[in-house]
Amino acid sequence: MTYVVDFQTVSTVGLESSPVADALAGLRANEARYFKNKYDHEFTVEPAADARDTVDWVHEILRDERDIVIDSPPLEATAFEVGGVRWAYVFYASGLSVNVLYTLEDSGKRAVGFKLSDGMEVPEELATRFKFARQRSKLAGTIRGSYFTIKTEH
Image (cartoon, rainbow, N blue to C red):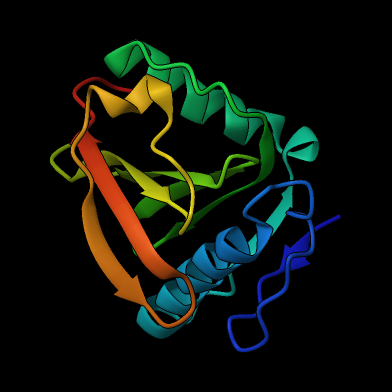
């Protein structure tokens, strides 16, 4: 079932099995606020089991570009196109959020972003590969994030 993420009333719906469910819900709401304010886009998610194509696409990019396999199970995912960009998000039980920004024009930006929920440790599969910058959010507390540029077509 699709869930519309409300950034004014943060809810852990769909994320209850995460040990950092409240912080992950705040992180998800922070993304929803960004897309509403920047693109007037309603951010929706669905259970990862119902979004296999999105989860598989994100995992393919991680594997092909950097040989990364996320150990935590995915809880929710979403994919949409707005502003000439294909976006995909996967939210994991550990509190990790992975997003793909994939500009449809050949010369556009293409990147993978990692965001860590407040209170979670850096996943072992990312710890030695990336440095994480900190950012404060009213909805999500302290967010730590990093990214890499996608080099090949996906």
